[in-house]
Length: 279
Length: 320
Image (cartoon, rainbow over all chains, first blue to last red; front, side, top):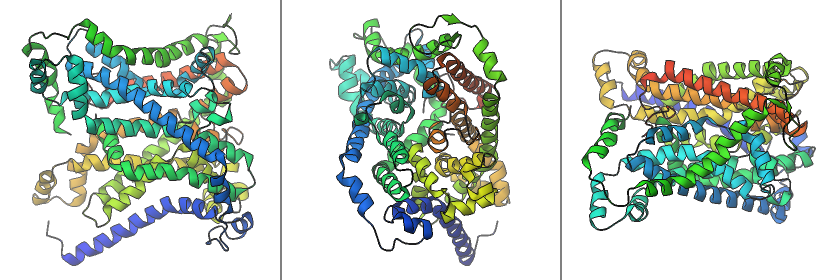
């Protein structure tokens, strides 16, 4: 193949940019519609939905930001995501340690048992789960969401962590053992600190899936004070059906934390998905 | 293919033979480390699924103990129920649309973005962003976009041929409008998978093909595409499983309507289980969902993913 001329490269790059910008617009325009729509009143939305707000109405945003409902939901989502992550990463790291570095009969069968869970969605188990949580008196209790989320997050977390733990050379463990380090000492003082990148990856995945979970908090929390953002957004939309501008403001505000988190943790998230899915 | 694939077996086998027994590696240690995860998993994942299997054989409203045993009646009822059969058909349509439109488009885009393009990182950041938004947020946002009178949604609705100008209010177009929103949210995810796999292909391979006189299409067809095989197969797998279990977006946007035009198995299950308190029948639907996912996974793994020794979702020896 002849080497492309600089001009040819430039033309090709230009067309690539055009395609990319068009697709980027498809992504951004609906989001922008939400952000700007929140600054309009409903009259403006009806007459010129795509124009810039004129005049700008910050009331929808300020109204939401000064009421406690939004902040409460933000807190709930954060608390539940962090607690879920601590539980799932903690227990999965211990299990992955065993699966990665101990040899015993039935290990692979047990590991398979966990990894089959990769296919179980909440939807399959939600009814009995609900009944179980009801009988354990965990409805309207954040742990009614945290513990099942952690349980359903175990398979993917164990799979990724075991893979990483296996890459740490056996010599390090032998040296630690010679220095008098027990299994727990090695796990806690050497393995976990060395596995920080993998722990970051699985934590980010756990946070995102907890943050976005809808079905479980929807059935567990009838008490509004425990609602998470997804449940809150849906309820807000039902409450203000006709007030499109206000709904758009609420949706926009609920997107901000997720997008901010994405901006910070993009590397872990993408690395985790690409690496984790690849196996 | 990652190099890790090649180093799989030694790690596992060497460990056993080489090392002398060391203190603190006994049954108690193993049990102590495994127990928390095992308890959590068995109690909150396995038991509920087994219980769902049990209650699917009863006519039960969810209160007290199930006593009215009906055998397979709930299942025969489901497979005679036009709504449930419609769920299967709609799921099939969504899967086909994803496989012929969404995934190939994601792949094409990933190939474009693999070039040395200035600003590539920014494009990637934007394309992937919808993935981090919750399905609920996405759903509410698009309901507003598609509410009648909003120029943008109206245009798309009329392209889809919706009567009355609102794609989500017409049972004939709602599924396709839903597919557009699904694609908006998920194409970036698949694109990222392809892109990561593409960047793992050594430059030498494509360069060698190019030196041998292959044109870009031939390079893609005979070098890149086969090497992307494992990733493509996993991406198809995730897309199909995800579609079989679709709930959040549909529930928020349409609750399955209008006239069941966008209803999915999970929505039907939720309606019966949490709205009409026919828990036995709803359990049967969730068991069918589970069964379909499982059968698909097993067959797919046997027939298609067999060559990928280390697919993330294979049942044996999963590792990086």
